[in-house]
Length: 175
Image 1 (tube, one colour):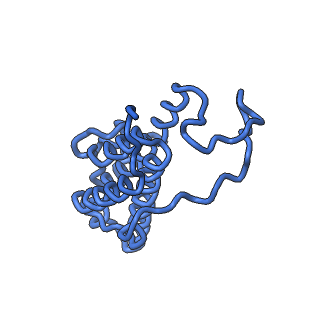
Image 2 (cartoon, rainbow, N blue to C red):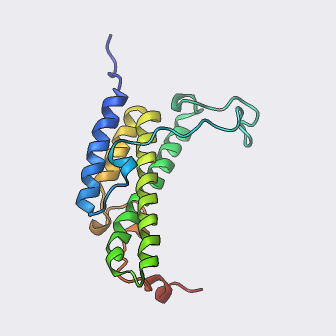
């Protein structure tokens, strides 16, 4: 009867949604209506039933984290999903201040869409971590909300650099 207790996924998702809502409030961005009421469900299933390439080509598609062959591959997959989610949330943190300084109403509307999309994608990936990577995913999802761009604790350093002006990249990035 020993061993590690199972994660209550529904409870973990509800707790993470509450923390995500608080994170958005702390960051100063409104949640899209769909996210205010709950986390997105998983998207439709895969288009394929078999692995399409690589050394596992032709084998049945993995549907559970534990089915992915080898701990190193599972670790890498967890890291990739977590890093992608961190980038979405970091983008929200970096671009939120630009909303009030947009050069035009059209630019402001476009940036508001970017913020909403990144909030949605970050929430989808946070939920995916919890649903598909048992306890380690719940820990990774919680860490997403603990990191902050203004504290320079985002995973990728590009999301730790403040963006203070619409033309900041144009002035510093070579074409």
